[in-house]
Every structure is written in C-alpha cells, then in structure tokens.
Image 1 (spheres, rainbow, N blue to C red):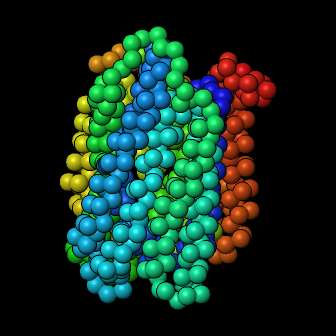
Image 2: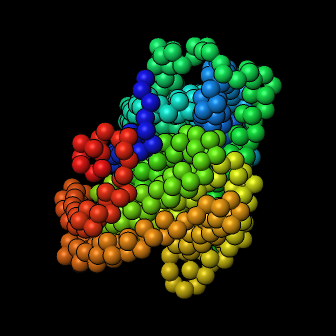
Image 3: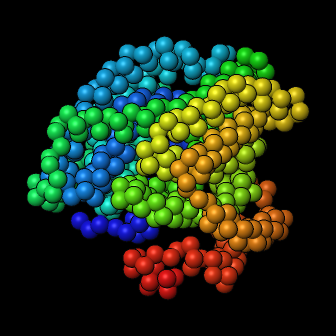
Length: 540
C-alpha cells in the first residue's frame, strides 16, 4: 500500500467520499418513493440518535489512532505503531458493547421524548423498534473507523476510501432490497421496512470491515520494526489514546447535539406552540434529519476528503515544530474549501426547487426549507475543518468552548427564531436554520481568533486569497441569477430537471473555472510539487 501526499491524499479521499455521497443521493429517489416523508422522519429519528451514541463509543478514536500513529512514525518509534492499533481495538470493543446495551435499553425513554403528539405521525413503539435495530451497527462501525484511522496515520488513504464505497454500496442494496421485500412482497408494514433500512448500517459496516482487515493483514504495517526510541508502555499508549480521543468524543457529541437539538426543538415548537399537524411537523423534520442532509452530504464530502489528508500532515508538521508549514497548510485548506464550496452552495440553493423535484417530487414545503438548510453544509463544513485543525494541534479546550458557545446560542434562540419567523409570515423552520448559521458563525469566529491571537497562526494568506475570490464569486452569482431567470424552474417532471440542472451547472461552473484559471488563481490553489496528477494536468 502506497503513501499519499497532502493534496494527493485529499484528492483520493475526496473522490472516494464523493462517490459514496453520490450513491447516497441517488438511492434516495427509490427510497423516498418506497417510504415517503413519514418513513423518512422515522429513519431520521433512528440515525440521529444512533449518531449520538456512536460518537460516545468511538468518535475520537479514529482521530486518536491516526494522530498517535503519525507521531510514532515521525519520531521513528515504529515498533509501537502496531501496538497502538491492537490496544485501540480492545478499548473500542468495550466502549461499543456498553453503548449498544445503553441504546437498546434506553430506546423507549428516548422514543417518548422524540415522538410528535397528534395523529398521523410515528408512534413511540415505531421509534423504539427502529432504535433497537440500528443499535447493532455500534458493534461494528467503530472497529471500521479505527482501522481507517490507523491507515490514515500512515498517510495511506486509498483503502479507506475504497472501504467507504463498499460500505455504502452494501448498505444501499440492503436498504432498497429490504424495503421493497418488506413492503411489497411480505407486507410487513412501514416500520419493519424502515427497521431493515437502519439495520443495513450493520451489514455494510461488517462487509467493509472484512475488506479492510484483508488489506491490512496483507501489508507489513502490523509487523514489528526496529525502534529508534524506547518502546512506549501499554499504559502510556492507553493514556495517549484517551488524551486525544476524549476531547474529540466531547466535540463530536456536542456537534451531534446541534442536529438533535434542531430535530427536537423544531418538532416541539411547531407541534406544541404553533399547533402544526403531526404530518406537517414530521415533513419538516424529515428535511432536517434525512432528505435535506443527503444533498448537504455532497458538499460535506469535499470537506471530509480534505480533512482525511489534513490530519496526518498537520500532525507531522506540528510534531517537527514547523509552525510555518502548519500555517501554510491551514490557510491552503480553508482556501480550497471556500473556492469550491461557496459557489456550489449558492448553486444548490438557487436550484433547490429542480433538485428537490428531481429526487423527491414537487414539494413547496421541502424546497422552501432546503433553500436555506443547504447553507448548513457551508457553515458547518468550514467549522468542521477548523475543529479538525485545532484537534490536530491538540487545542482541545478551545474546540470544546467554541462548540459549546454555538450550541448554547442554538438551544436558547432556536425556539424564539422559529416563532419570530412564523410571526413574520415566513416558514417557521427557516428560523431554526438561520439560528443554526448564527451559532456556527460565533463558533468559527472564536476558533479563528484563538488560532491567531494565542498560537500565532496567521491568516494573512487566507484573507489575501479571499480578496482574489471576490471577482470570480461575484461573476458566478451574476451568471447564476441570469441562468435561473432563463431556465424553466417550475416544471413538475422529474427527468426534465436533469438537463435543466446539468446545462445550468455546466454554464455557471465553466465560466467560474475559466476565470480562476486565466487569473492564475487555480494554479496557485493547486500548487503541490509532490502530486503527479496535477503535473500531468499542467496545473503545477
């Protein structure tokens, strides 16, 4: 297995994640047709709670394993690298078993908190059944994540990316096949169909884990090697793993609370205060918990791919105390994100109607909510990278503070924003989205100030590059506005949306890329002397 350069690893992981997200977006067309908005809300309940428990069982360990592996390799302490992996697997086994038992036993109290009052919605028993089925995935997925973290620590990105594709393909096959059989062959009902769908996470994780284990054991990564430094004790390795992992668990837990908070508060305020029907409430909730999140996943895939490559490279530079290189990589990461994600977010927002119609059918409610919800991906994605940067530099206190202040703002003002938007005659759920964006902005601002004031990370290069973005971004938005006025946006057919979005996207992004290429901005952003692909494309 070959190591990857910073941008090379980012490119490979990004392509892999994009493929995974594309599969995840495409399958929702038949999935939505099979289970509808009510089933989508139930599916979202299961996965949001599952993500919360998963973060408590393993969220920090992929990062901890990757970071500790990178450190030992950088220090020449290679004999202990394989021990890090073996010890982390033992810890993960214990944590996963505990979280599985807790979620299984607490399914009913959690379901009572989530369930919407009124007729037409999902019952407590429905939610309990789905939560207990999805809990089995906690027994597998953490092991999968730790193995990927171990490989990332070696700067080996490709197998992890392939395993994600395998996991997603298997999961989609089980979801669609299981749903169809449950509903149209065995007539088991909607709840059983959704239960099979969430159980697919366990099946996909298991197959993907087997693939990674085969790749890992066919390599020499677990073999003992000559050690430059004295071997680390088992106690020291465990202490280091928890030292790196626990802050990340807290961070991931609080981050997931953003989604759970929105889900619970939106439902409670709309149902209990604004007296919306259970059907309308769960339709809005499904945008937050599943259908809108599928589209946002495409944007986040680009950011996640960069994160996978950024962590070991930042750790390597920081371990060598090369602050200049750390600063350069941080600026480069944020520049790449803004270059790609900003125009993509505006495009998806502008074409939220055709996009929603193409995948889920005509829906004013879904389109209106998602038109704003897509910006969650932009703000949340930027914050995710900044969090990853702080964690890579071991600035855990700052990460926790930045997330908590944003979350507290969200908890306090989510309800008032929803009510205010309703009083203004606007879509109430959009108020929750705006509140979340403000919360992210607060967290991002605090994190950047900490990096700059306390740790000497300069963002002069970033701000200089942002100035260069102004003209391409402005031209892109102008072209986008013109295209939306020319393109037929109100057609109801699903297939007709494909050429509308394809041609519109081709026009907008071709002009955007042409401008950045001619100005030299594209070459500047993709400058990486170690990346052979970029050399072949003559972008170096």
